[in-house]
Length: 357
Image (tube, rainbow, N blue to C red):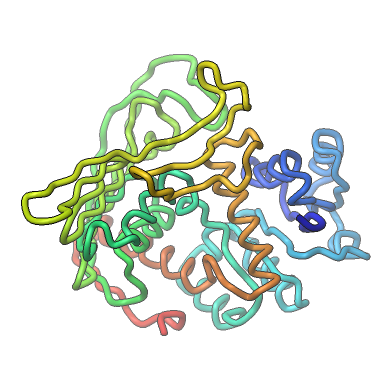
C-alpha cells in the first residue's frame, strides 16, 4: 500500500467526526491533515481532541495544502457554496448528503458542477449487511428483481436503497404516500440511552413507488435509526427468489427450493483471539461482502464511511464514480416527491430534471 490519502475536512460536527475517527484508526490509508471550521472554539477542540491542524480561515486552509480531496461535512444550506468553491478551483470534493437542500438548489448545483470532480458521501449501500444483500440481488440468484420493501433510513438514504435494490435509474416514477403518528418510547439516540421510558409522538412515512417494470414500498420512522426494539427491514423479491433481510430463498430447479441465510463471519468470539472485527459475509460458499479494512475495530456504519473515503480516493485516481452528483440529486429529488405526496395526499409523478439523461 502506498502513502495515505491526504484529506482536507470542512466541518467538525458529529458527522464530520466519523472521518476524523476513521483516519485515526486507519492511518496507513487516510490522513486528515487540516480542518476548516466556523469558530475558534471548534478549532481548539479539533486540535485538542484529534491532534489535527484546524483553522477558521479559508486562505489558511488552502495555503500550501496538497489535498488529494476535500470532504465538505457541513449543513446543507452552506454545502453547495463550499462544494462549488473547491470544485471550481479543481480540488476533488466529497460532499455530504444531500448535495443541496431543495430542487432549485440541486438543479443549480448540477448545472454548475455536473462534470466536476464531485462525489457524494452516501454510505448506506456500503454498510456490510446492505452491501451483501444488494450483491445477492445483483448476482442473478433471485432472477429479475421486480419488487422491494425498504424500511431502513429516511428520505434520500432510503430512496438510494430503493433504486439500488430494484436496479432502476432515472426512469419516471409514480408515487403515493401518507404519514401516520404513533406513540412509542424513545430508547436511544446519538448521545446514548435515554434516561426514562417516556412515550412521544413519532411520525411514520409510508410510500409506494411505481417505476413501471418494478415497484417499491418505502416506510420509515425515526426511532428505527438507533433503537434496539425497532427493526430495520430490506426485502428484495425477484422472479426466481426472495431476500428478506438475511434470509434468502430461491428455486434451483423444478421442485428444488433452496433456503439459506447470509452468514456474518466475525473474529474475537469464544476462543478466537485474532481481534474483534467483521471479516466477511457469505451465502453458502459465496462471499458477498469482504472487509477491506480488517483488522481495524470499526462498527458497520464506520466501515461504510471508510468505504466511501476509499472509493473517493479511487475516483480521484481513475475517474470511476461511485455515487455521483446526478445519483445523489435524484435520490433527494424522489425523497422530496415522497414528502410532497404524503403532505398533499395526491399521486405525484416525477418530471424532467437535468441530471436524468
